[in-house]
Length: 206
Image 1 (cartoon, rainbow, N blue to C red):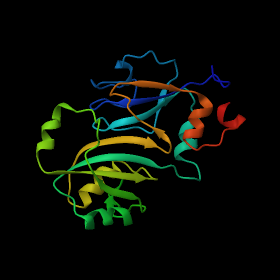
Image 2: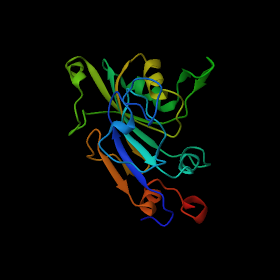
Image 3: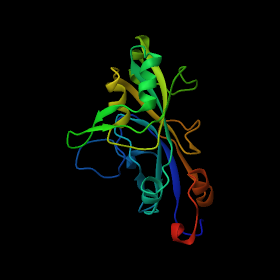
């Protein structure tokens, strides 16, 4: 048991599942997974229902502020499958910052990020829609330190490509690894904060 009494998990959130335990809508929920999460567990840094991959669950309510609202931004890395072939020039636009529309209809220039064209990831779990991979497409790896609503989908659309698949693979050094869709891994508290590069203290774990 962790000293604070809190527990920390990562899951590989499947496609077509929302990042919450309750909803007024008829949708797949985190509680539908084959795991008995402790009372008070909630998601940190949600993924929309069409996105997949690394999602943090914890009983520690302080993690959201520590991870996403602190002074030091934390890196989040995604694999992105987009329609058609992406040019090196378009990747450079992503790296340098590109104009997207954010909440309220305002334009926003994204913060410079890491972006590269990559080979199709090996060992990637397929979705039923995998037939799309028979059509021209490109895999990108994008690392951000910010998270506007649907930011990556809007970024690739801004360079003329539609996002077909979006998978979060890591947050700092906390990696999805070979965890299968729907899989759950519990992480010891001190190791959890080390991987996320968050300094531990009595205030954090209290």
